[in-house]
Image (cartoon, rainbow over all chains, first blue to last red; front, side, top):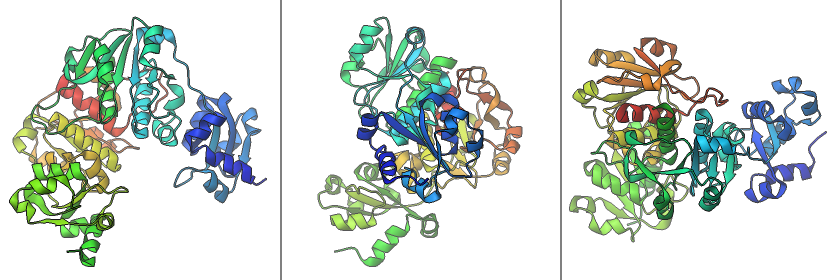
Amino acid sequence: MPLSRAQIKYLQSLKLKKYRLRYNKFVVEGDKMVREAIRDIPQNIKAIYALPDWNAGATLPADLQTILQEVSGSELERISQQKVPNQAVAELKLEFKAPDPEKVKTGLSLYLERVQDPGNLGTILRIADWFGIAAIFLSPDTVEPFNPKVIQSSMGSVWRVPVETATYDAIQTKFPQIHWVGSSLSGSPLKNWQKKAGSMLVIGNEGKGMSPELSARCEELIFISGDPNSKAESLNAAVSTAILVSAFSNF
Amino acid sequence: MPLSRAQIKYLQSLKLKKYRLRYNKFVVEGDKMVREAIRDIPQNIKAIYALPDWNAGATLPADLQTILQEVSGSELERISQQKVPNQAVAELKLEFKAPDPEKVKTGLSLYLERVQDPGNLGTILRIADWFGIAAIFLSPDTVEPFNPKVIQSSMGSVWRVPVETATYDAIQTKFPQIHWVGSSLSGSPLKNWQKKAGSMLVIGNEGKGMSPELSARCEELIFISGDPNSKAESLNAAVSTAILVSAFSNF
């Protein structure tokens, strides 16, 4: 059965944040990503649209078989948000994995303050997934994690890593013992970091860094020492995150 | 004087590697990047095209004043490779900064083997610049560093970091004492890295990693330990570079 115009219009609308939040749905694309969604969060899959020769189609669990709809190449192109559509598109319920408070109290979490670049957020999600970060908290003005560019660059980490939108005050109320740590040019060298269980590492905006308000609330500020003669102005936000999270986990 | 059609066509041609290599020139764009080029490599600037109200225009050194040409907004749009042109475009001589052999012998260098993504190369150049890496060697099939996407994401690091295209054999002939180090899932944990003066860290292709040939030639293989329960498949090439270079420099 061909896709109806209403279906196509609906799936296309999920490119936009407004409609993702209105319908509480988002889309993932491509053989690899759709397979990961099937493996990780089958209960959240509302529909799968795939070419007749999609390999994974035949081996789907029975309950997902019923929501698999075969589409033609031209239909896939119409519902895809990618330049080169790849075999399958899945519609999923938009739902964050909830942070486990006990892990936040004992592990390392991230607070992203006004991170704007979807590629950076996707990369940070992937880093957090690799290192088993307790949770990522997003300031209310950080880029939305179900943005298609975040989804594709996170490689599925977006639904495996606990994510919550929260203000500093909300986190502080819930976790009064948490140790806020920031990255700053005026901080102490990375190797002197007094790593503590229950830490919240702040990653600031790409251009402006951490806000002065949040910086003032950090009990420790870290500086990623480079070459003193370098003319490079800064490190990318995702790169700084990687270095700090690895330092916390590996040293 | 308006730009001639030949000038416009020539500047547009520099979008393509073929013409960059033919003319031995490349282009940087935007107020910030053009200012950095003026600060760092004024001798390599062949021409500057800028809007009449470009702030830096009035304070240029005399020899650069003579090669500054004012252009209209529509002319800037025609010669720009960006979606949103920003005040100025400069044409530069395509020239790598040459590695200092003494620094290679005593510091940390990178060998990029078939890195394909321009954004990754740009980010790696910025990391190398920050940490004062001795040199970046590129396998002949790595993405070209004067690609406009590399230039823009490297934020000027592309001309500050010594870069050379070279095979393993060529490096080995020139630096027989160098310690080759690779990143591998079967390597030893990062914190056990026996860091040695005169090391060459191999960063492999985004999808396939390091080639088996080069892996076999490494005297040490490192694994960036993550959460053993993580379902994340890998870290991004630039992220791995950041973690390893920081570990070498800071711990």
